[in-house]
Image 1 (cartoon, rainbow, N blue to C red):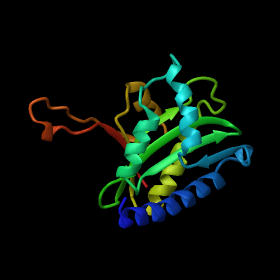
Image 2 (cartoon, one colour):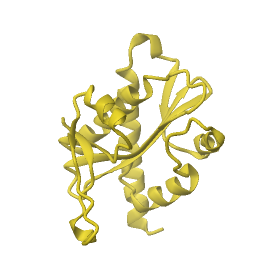
Image 3 (cartoon, helix red, strand yellow):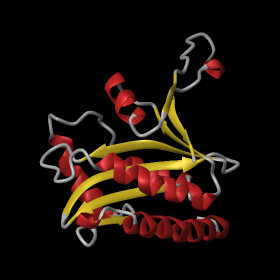
Image 4 (cartoon, helix red, strand yellow):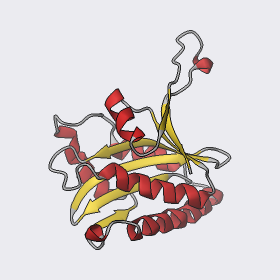
Length: 184
């Protein structure tokens, strides 16, 4: 790893830490001291491996391998592990646009079984992502590739607007992703 990459990793980890602290401080009083927002580490990745066997899982993203590649490629990334006591409740990862005007959330997953924060993981995730986006100076947050209409409707409840993409089969360069966005 080059020195410039390591420097970027350190600088942006500090920004991620500040965003998580701000988001934790903004949680409702009933969650203070109960929920912790952390970066993704080997402990959270080990806990996420248990999700693979659940038949309730909506996506099949390999968190360990995917995170390792993603984190190496994007030192400015957003990442979040949501814990309630010793239970991993959710993971998410995203990255800013090259000019830093937007932050995109690429992968979000809630613990598929026995999640004590069921129904609140996305709200907490958006709180931390918005704090990180504002820390970057971004003016827009995007949720990329919602997997179904139910999720589009769910995210819309938080003020996000849907943009339908196009998946042109003839020319790969003409493909445009579908996502939801919110101006900050």
